Image (cartoon, rainbow over the protein chains, first blue to last red):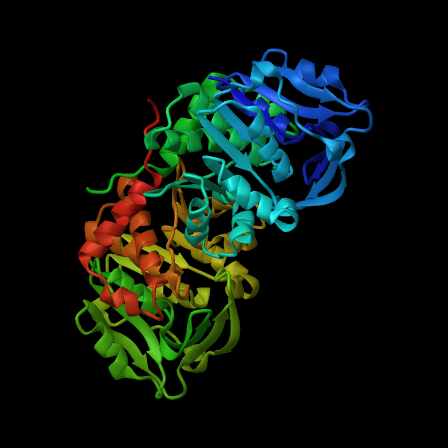
Length: 304
Length: 304
């Protein structure tokens, strides 16, 4: 089954202790698509400006099942983000954000995308996320992401959005900020009371929780010896997670757990190189092996 | 099999967002013993001053297999620590540390403790940790802990100590500080190259890694809805971990993994109340249930 994703398509300039990359493919929609397309066909809706290197994007995605028919070409500069990571690689320091054509983005879902069974509303204005939902027909699963900027400026709209999604992915700081609960178990309950049946809280290098009404699942991040560039890990996680659900079409708890692990695996690949580079190289065997490695990482028998 | 532990026996005064406790039982030796004694007999070596409420300690431990014959009574004030936790409960703010009789502590291992098969060198001066090892006869396993204070002031002694222990437990910040490696996989390798066959890196609410030459195991911290007081969680983790190894006498990788989970379970109990209160209340069934809950938390099947 296919996944419709609405998200940013940007140009990133990143500096890490290991190197520097200028104007490389970035944005939540781009990372999500590069990741999810290993598992299911992806329909990307986003916007780029007149300065965007479309041929680079098309070339990167040429062997992947990613439909770019929903990528709008607008007059003006593309969304650009410039950031830096220090030695510990834990937090990105944003040096510059230029929204460009993204600031006037109004997602238009092409006719042929409107029946996508899986919909991922990437991190954009929650009012636009709600608008997308008026354009699609009864998906099997609607998931959304959000970020601190929207929690500060459009909190009421996010709460409205929660009533219309099945699942939300957000990081631990965002969950605490949205719910005003320091404790993540309580934060997840607060969110589930407002709509979503599942809450996935991403903790970066510390793994991810999936909360449901009756259970908690935890998947660690895979401990890599060299993390090269953390940019896009969260969106790649979401891509692996929703991509696996779309591939299997199975929303049972057992399968949702497996999907979280696929998310963790894809997030761990994303950080091995700049931009979507590593996500474009990996094979189905690499993914299967990484999922197996995560299984070995946490596996134990309860009794002697 | 029994566990010999050398560690601090202190009086803690703690303030958390949920309450305040004054001059309650604390110290690494105390938490370790309260935890490990659920699984194996414990022999505690430490020192208290003339002001120490010995009857309170004896009463607390009266139904537990904890031998206090190695608890020295010295002239002078007991070790006291006063600290505070803010809303996020992640880091203790130390308001006051008075070492008292602990500053001149020279561990003397009673004759009847010298053949203990399991030895845990709690967080004291690494030169004293080495001195303890000259007083014991070929244990099956020697484990040690350390902290930032000793890494700063006695780094060379810690490196010497590493050559004489089988296992070290330390937290992530300490591992990074000791090895000057930001990456935990590399930090663990650095440590293993200097002696220990196993390195356990504790990450507080983010769980714990166990590294061996050929594998990595990860156990999450159990996500509690109310964490009351994080003091002693790391020492309670170590008590559960080493206590389980002593109970089973089995140093296979499968059993070491289970031991890490027992450590995580005991750490999760410790934080539910002030001091060792919760550790003294729990039953074998509570522990078994918590280990089962951690198994459910991470359990997933790789394939449909």
